Image 1 (cartoon, rainbow over the protein chains, first blue to last red):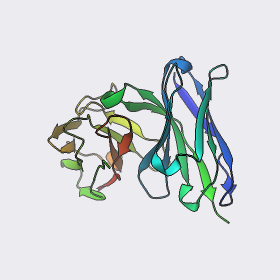
Image 2 (image 1 turned 120 degrees about the horizontal axis):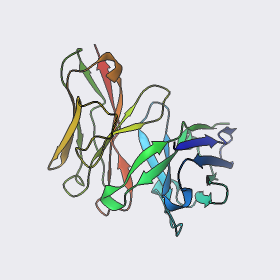
Image 3 (image 1 turned 45 degrees about the vertical axis):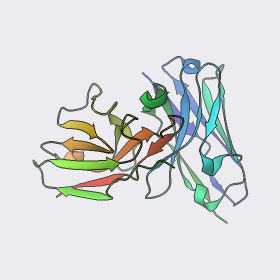
Image 4 (image 1 turned 90 degrees about the horizontal axis):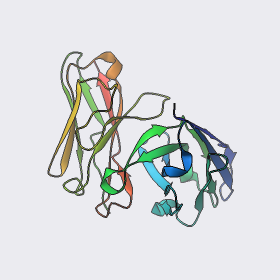
Length: 121
Length: 108
């Protein structure tokens, strides 16, 4: 059974940094692309970053480009997201999600339960 | 940039049919996907590739795409269907994932 468990969410001041982790199990982790998707309070879903399976190419949405870094440790089946230069608008629940398909066929078939990041002074 | 537009809310009585739309310029060339999200829970995919239903998703959930509009249809709505529904696609370059703003379905 596929299982994704996020951790690392916290209250952090504007300009601060945080590292989120997602422990994956139940599938061959390094062969799947993985993404981080966030949801601000009372808002919709926002895709923010992805890492491809195999060659580990990385992709970022414009609002986080240059501030967030996605990575994976296949020896530990763990996906990470390093957040820096945090802004109040980064406040959200952050989900890790497994991708299936590529290009137009790309969607998220498994999600974790999310971890809350609050950016406030 | 490509965007997906959903109505903020839809209300329907039990047993009736609910239709939730998702509009975007990328939809004629990119597939639409639909997720159900109940309060405090992670999203769950209920429709993939415009109209396919994953195993375990009830048959009352269906979807179609015509031109720039994708439509999720819930036939014979039940109280347990009350949730937020999010559409998802890719931008016209198929490099980035885009989501609609989500629609809150209220079962009266």
